[in-house]
Length: 151
Image 1 (tube, helix red, strand yellow):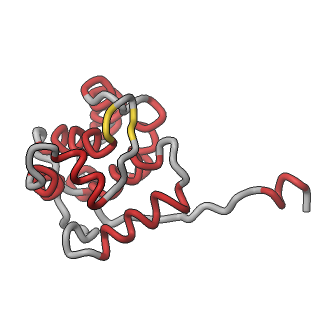
Image 2 (cartoon, rainbow, N blue to C red; image 1 turned 45 degrees about the vertical axis):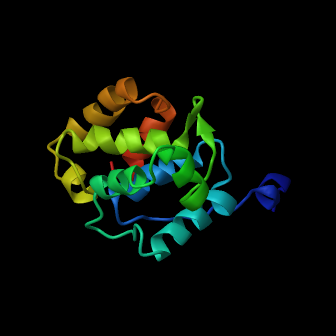
């Protein structure tokens, strides 16, 4: 075994059931340790009754859950349920909320709805429109998100 192979880290391979968890995975994995931070955080969230990762979990459930936190909703939600980490100077919770809102405004709520879009629509939606409309989602994250969605 070469030294590079011996020193290579093994990353968890996680397949989420919902588009929301794909978005959370994508955003929170930026500049974070996937195995020690992202997977445990999302596993804890999914095991709680708050936002269980199911096929029918909708983006609007996350938006409503964040909005229920009151005045400093992004900070409060980050501290209580996710992480206070930032992306492009913004709370990652805020970035995820903006991504969720982006899809809800287009009447897309679930992973099956994304996967049922015709031909190049998902790529155009994520790689062009989402990237230009949500600060914090750049080319690398939009490509990763698209792969998490199954494209």
